[in-house]
Image (cartoon, rainbow, N blue to C red; front, side):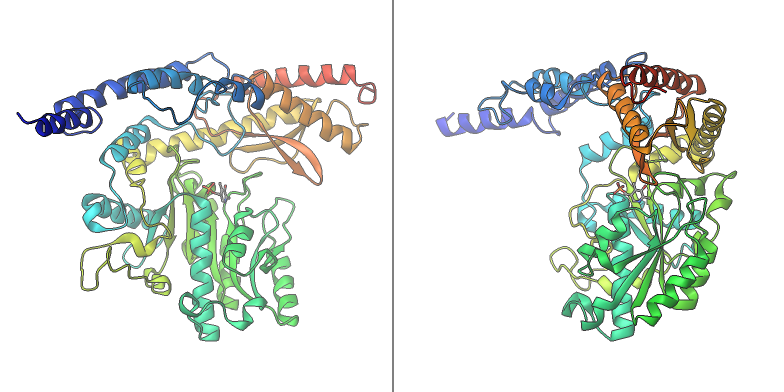
Length: 506
Ligand SMILES: *Cc1c(COP(=O)(O)O)cnc(C)c1O
């Protein structure tokens, strides 16, 4: 054997243990995955607190002696062993009292799919990088179109990183269509038309901030978003919309898109979608529904009606990494009339050569290299069925109603609004003489102290200028007694804060 040959063999052997496809690599994968699984199970155990309570300073300390780019490696198993401290100081999203945000416990079929899609590493930008995955995603999009009442043959769409990207895609198509039809401008080629300064997007004042973010990224600016008042249930008010439309008209501004929200982040409120669809028809607006949160109701026989009118939307954003229990990231953008994609048609000739009849999804997305996230909801629907998922979703909506009753009956708390989905906004309010400032301060102090002790992870929001607390009860394993126990802790913490602050106690 020549010296050069021996070197080649050595190189090959060390690569073999790092990559799949040889006995050495396959065995290393099996051992690494088993070890990683144990590390995960160590960190999500029952009875533990949802967070270790570490501060930013102490977490920086955790990595103080470590280089993120060490010169020499330790081998994968030791590296996984070391990573346990990261997992132990992560919020445990599977814990029943981790209920701050729209941040779900991931379901086991989704986790299995995640392992499969990352190991096979298909890339959704061209057929020759993801043949079966491209077909599966295409079929999944068709069936999602049907679930939302679209005609599956006419509809189209794509998996996205989440609501942010799906909302952007909806408003991008809305802008392109309007500029083409109204001003004869192909924005993709020529940039914004001179009249772009007058273009307006309408949404409710409770809409997600990504509507403004999209307007900024689309070159229209955040000021292109005109917010419309909501009613007492925090739903976009159609009468107010009519007034806003005539006001814009008088000022020679041109609305081109109307964003309805199905499940606002704080209250879960659902805009009156049918009435918005009527207005959109009447005024030639692109109707986009941000159903990132509430879209999951489409799977529920009991609650599907609340989305009525969503089938008339031009486009829909739905997230699977919220109420569909999929690991991050996983969302979809759905388009009622797939031919609208022509407005952003691109031909990356190396991915999508002209005359190539294979389906290439690259032109439907704003991403190029893209994950095969469709496998996760596919596998989950397969494993538990639509009805199985619906039962989970329905259970969380029921729990939220029970928690609202609990809060309404308790003199120490103020229920800010009846929940629509499973988010509940409330305040600790021991008596009615507190100023807004003190009320806000004490609620924030409670939240921080529970997080610092790691006892419960809840969110804060602001309602009418005053801080409030929020539970987002996504976890189907959370019970009424879990929530009641947190409310007890919360009340005790509030009472002791009152005791040490003379201006708070009566
Ligand atoms: C979460 C959410 C978004 C943002 O979606 P991401 O998945 O975080 O990108 C947008 N709109 C609503 C209503 C949401 O709940």
